[in-house]
Structures are given as structure tokens and as C-alpha cells.
Amino acid sequence: MTSSNPVANAGSGLPSSTDPVPDVRFSLPTPPTTPATHGSVTVDDVALAAEYIGFAPTAGSDPVRPATAEIAEYALWLGDDALILAQQLAGWITRAPELEEDMALANIALDLLGHARSLLRYAGAYDGRTEDDLAYLRDASAFRCAWLFEQPNGDFAQTIARQLVASGYLFELYTALNASSDATLAAIAAKAVREVEYHRDHAVQWTLRLAGGTDESRRRMIRAIGDVWPYVDELFRDEALIEELEGIAARPSMLRVRFDAVIDAVFREATLEVPDVAPSAAGGRRGRHFTTLGPLLAEMQVLARAHPGATW
Amino acid sequence: MVIHTLLPDSPPVREDSPPVPETVEGSPATRAPVPELVEGSPTTRARAIAGAVVDPEIPVLTIADLGVLRDVRIDGARATVTITPTYSGCPAMDAIRDDVILALTDAGFADVRVEVVLSPVWTTDWMTDAGKRRLREFGIAPPTGQRAVGPIPVALAVRCPRCGSLDTREVSRFGSTSCKALFECRACLEPFDHFKVH
Image (cartoon, rainbow over all chains, first blue to last red; front, side, top):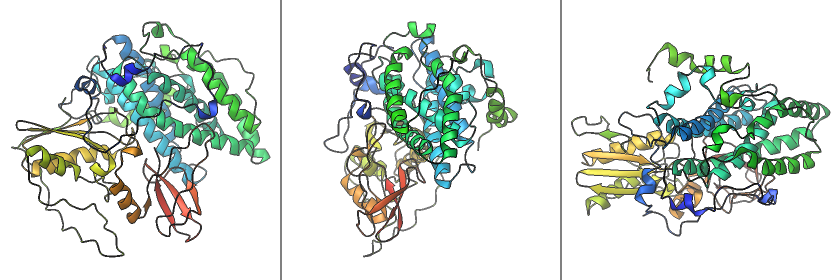
């Protein structure tokens, strides 16, 4: 899609592997311009039209259609990551170690669900499918989420380890995607990056607390990191699709340096070490999934499939 | 793009709004003030009416206070209202969209469209000073200062909306809605919500 979005085109493009590693403690997306006065906001009409992605699948809505099948596929990947992680985190509601964590994990899930809805709505617009079609009516082999997001909740430490990796990756992804030449992806990313930064902060704080807490909490945190780390590698692999999306997609391999720098800073503070584990044979982007995805989808989809088109 | 359109031959059913209580001293209003009978051009009227729709979760704030209302345009018989979400997953957006359509349809606008945009991205900088004041009077600490940044951020003290003390403690980084965190005051011992800097 050719964009006239001044924001999307303002940057010098996506980060390259030669960019210096930033001071990770203060690595941030470009801060938004503070509006001098409230109200009477005007934005270029063409740019706005590209971002009318809406929220509810209301009759008569007419979402923006991705320019190519490749862009739609890419949006599907990112949407599936967010959707599956949201569904997993929702499993903690009423079961977290304390009430505040029930709320925290539910709030994080809600943000992720918002990202998933925007991304899947965009992806589905390419061939006339709704966000609900994509969420509820696809079988596991049609999902494109990475294996990290399919890892079981495990104990609380494992969920935190998964959150640390997920939010660290998503922060770098959306930061880079903010400069995408695709106006819709750039708008979704600009919105999402502020939220996943807060999720990352939550995960970092718990990582420090568990690693520096009791012998038991530290033992569990170390075990959790070891269980999750084989699935880090897949997030940063450049699949063939990425080659078709120059300037549109964020190149996964180029996000790795910044991600590693943040993890290093956190682990240094928590006196943890990156585990020496072999990467998994994960193939989520090609529809090969971890064993957890089938049961997870069964639970997520059963109502919508038993009562097609039902509303409440 | 049409998100939702109500035509005049399918009028919304809504009971008359209950009278809004006057603000009594020491007893802050629990809803945002309803605007006076609005006169002027259709655009002025539509802007005032749409802007007076309140956030269903924080009824003391209008969507104009929140910065959720981005634009109101009149084109012939059609009113087009543009809103933006606070948080990506905020479920209040659907209610706000419906309330905008109801309010404008009630006021005689036959063809109302509500469009949702994500850009420019909403932050708490879009909230008006009047909105922040009403939040405080309502018992919610308004967003102040800058976002804490970086992977290991340092948070700033939040002032208790009840006694004004800065001796407060964050109980939970997440609260009853996406936009709030839970605090307690060490001085007056009251718990309170804080509208997060975003």
C-alpha cells in the first residue's frame, strides 16, 4: 500500500543491523509530540482513511484492505501471536498467586487481544474474512503463531519467563514497525508499543523479584528460563515472506541485538544467565505447531463453532 | 468507512436521562456536567453533543475531556464523528461509539457515523486540565508527569486525591480498567485509583 502517512514516512526506514545498540535502559520509540492544545485535531484525510480499522465487526463496516497477500499474511502472523498469548494469559484469571496478578495478567491479555483484533481484522480484509472467522474458524494448521506463545502457562515463574521474552520481543517489533511504510501496520504498532512496554516492565519486575526472592522462587525462575529459551530463536528467524516485505515488515533478525541487550541488562541485575540450550525445531510460521495449540484452540473455539454466528 | 449507522426509521429506544444532581460542596459530581442547550451551527452542536458523551467506566469524564473525541464533521445530513481508543483492547470503545450515535440521533442528526482511528496515538497528554481536575474530585489521581521509561524504570510519586499527601504506595500496577493502577495513601490510609501516565 502506498502511504501518504506523514508519520509513517517520517522515519529513515526500519533499523538496520548496523545501528548501534542503544542505551537499553532508556531505549524508547520516538516520543509522541505533545499536543499544544486539546481538540480540533486535523489529520491528512488519506492517512486517516488508511487507518479506519475499527473495533467491532459491525455490519456495514468496511475495513482497510492490505495491498498484497504478503502483507495480509504478515498481519496474520502477528495477530496470531497476540491472540494466542492473550488466550493463554486469560487462563490465569482466578488462579494467579494473588489478586493483583489476576488483574495484571487479565489487563495484559486485554491489551494483546486489542492488538490481535486490529491485526486479524486487517489480515482478514484481504480476502473478506472477519476477525472472528480467523480466530474461531481456523484449525491449528492454519495458525501462524510462533511456539513461544504456545508454551504452557506452567507455574507462575514460567509465565513470567514467557512474558519476559514475549514482551521484550514485541517491544522491539512494534518499535521497528512504527516506521513501516504500511500505514495500518505502523498505526497499530505505534499504539501497541506503549502497551507492551508496560507489559515488559511487569515481566522485568517479577523476574527480579523471583530471582532475588527465596531459594525456591529463584530455583523456579531459573528452571522457567531454561524451559522457555529454546523458543526464543524462532522469533528472530527471517522467513521467506520477510524478503517480500522490504520496508513493510520488521526484519526479525535485526531485532535480536536490541532484545539481547535488554535481556542482558535484566539478567545482570537479577544475576541470571542466558541458558545454553539448543533452539527448538519450531515451525509456527509454516503451520507446524507445539502440542499445546490444539487443546488451546478447542477451548477457545468451541462456543463459536457450536453456535455459528451467535451474538450476545 | 461506516462503522455503524443508525437511520431515522429505526430510532434508538432510550429512557429519558435522569436529572443530573447539582454539585454540592464537599460532594463532587459523579458525572460530567451536561452542556447547556447547545445552539449554533450544526457542526458546533454536533461537536458539543458528541463531546459530552461520558466514558462508561469513568462517568465523570467526557470523551472530549479524555481526548478520545478527535473530530466531528457535518456533510449535508450526515454527522461523522472520529474517536480514538485509549488502550488497544479497551472495551469501553464499543459503548462510547454506541452512545455517540444515540446522543446525536436523539438530537436530530439523521445519519451518524462513528469512525475509529489509531493515529495519532492517544496518550494522557490529550486529557484536558478540566478532565484532570474532575478526576481528582472524583477520587482518582490524574496522570501527572512523564511516563517511567526503560526496562527498569523509576516511578514518580503519585499524590493522594483525598488528602493530598505524596506519601503513597503502588499496590498494583494494573487496576480495574486498562487505564488505571491501584494505590494506597500512607497518610490517610485510603486506597485510590491512579489514571496511569500513558
